[in-house]
Image (cartoon, rainbow, N blue to C red; front, top):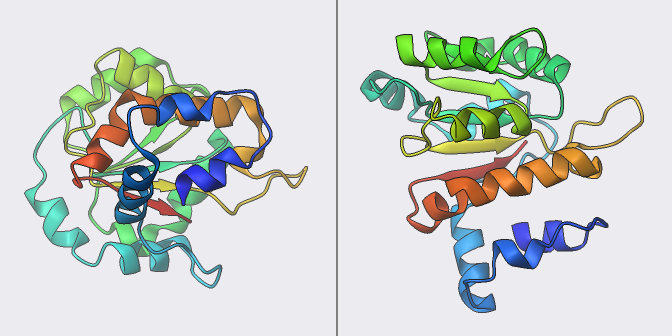
Length: 192
């Protein structure tokens, strides 16, 4: 599913390099097993997250690792990240949320925040999330859900994956350990 979605888009990033180590059949089985139910466009973000993660409260209570999150929501811009954070109040409850984007927030400030306290939800752009992982400020092992803000369109009617720079960063993020977590079935991917 993911491979087909990405291979049919028009850009120069070499998608096959992401999947080069897997045979085609194994790749398809692997990708299908790591996907959550897709948003049917009738859900708000909160209702979608409640549906795909019904045991969120239990997961949240058991999470005690710093420098990590249980759920990452990837979107195309800082403004969209703020909109998503505001729209998921019904889902997040007592969860600690961190904004992971570059606008007005330095990487080192975010690293310090992640080191200081336990955070459950991260919402941000793929570029900033990649940078935090590179600098060791964010660990992916405890990550259980990676949700892409797939259907939202900007003023020019572009989805996140229609913007070449963001699409490239998403693929680079997938290569930084996300795909290996999917292979171990410890991480689920969702398209909102």
